[in-house]
Image 1 (cartoon, rainbow, N blue to C red):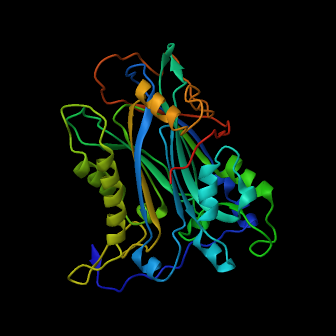
Image 2 (image 1 turned 90 degrees about the horizontal axis):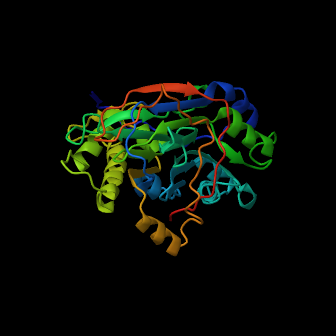
Image 3 (image 1 turned 60 degrees about the vertical axis):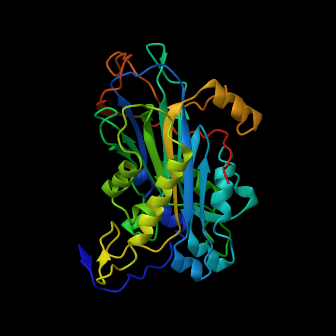
Amino acid sequence: MASRRGPVQRSPTFFVGAEKQKKDLDAFQRREQQLAEVYYKNKPLCFNACTYQRTHPVKANAGHRDADATLVSPMAVGVADGVSQIEEYGIDSSELPTELLRQCEELAFDQCIGSTTLVLALLDNSTRIHGKLHPMIAVISIGDCELVILRRLQGRSGPLELVFHTEMQRVDGHCQTPLQLARVDERIDAQFHDSITVEVIERGSAVHCISAYEGDIVIVGSDGVFDNLYLDEVAAIANTVLPPSSTQRPTHSSQLTNMSKRIVEAAHQKTRATAGGFLPEAPIGRGGKMDDTSCVVAEIIEWTEAHQKLYAREEFIPKWSNFWHCQVGCEGDENELQEYDGEMTPPGFHRKRSKRPLVSHPLRLHN
């Protein structure tokens, strides 16, 4: 449906103080594992990913800085969305999310202050079932960035379908107060202490571990994407760019970039009235949300010796032989996975829970 009302004016994302965040952390926490009950070839996988980001033209014309940062690498993809209200204190709202993704292992907050939401996905090529490799995607999210996984459940001739998505974490359910990772001083929050950042990660983060299959499409976006687009709209764009094919080969980077760009443009389109003066429906409400919008699109492909040589030569990530190991309890037994050595068939899913915290490992930021 649509409306002839004028654009809905929404103020920037608000900084949420330490004490207010603390009370909701346990409600936000997720420790979930989603295993497919089939096995598909014991070979390591990696991300083939591209990214596109653009602040909403209205915000850009008003002089606002793009506060989003994205991470693209063969073993990790992510989005961090800086809290724009931080700019009111003379702080660059893009600084912390950029540094956070660049120094993800140590959460290097010592070089900057700010506040951000984020979602990060890492490929775990070390999990073994029946002694064979079973790649998993480990996901951690804090706040209202989201991640979805699409898979051809009906085989290569079928459409990409949604098999997993994260949920937004918003304090009191308000769209302007997402759960946040922050490092601020007394100008912004007199009650802030570094321990709240650790507490947000350990108590408030949502952690998932999901089976990964060659050909899966992973889409990571800021709230500028998922406040404006419904999940079926995102899937429809993916199927338009990547229609079914009789062959399975890595998607060209131009197509992945095209998909991420089309998703961002479709999100911005929700804020514009049609020729008849109507505003389209969006998850956040008619007329959507004018926001910084970033999107990473990755295809799961086989990790080959060629990748190893390429990234070792460019020193993209040190020691590629030591793949990231999932720390959220990825495991399987005879009843959870059955060996499978042919064409991929639609997996069924079930969940197991773990209370073990996520431990992040070395990454490099793609600029």
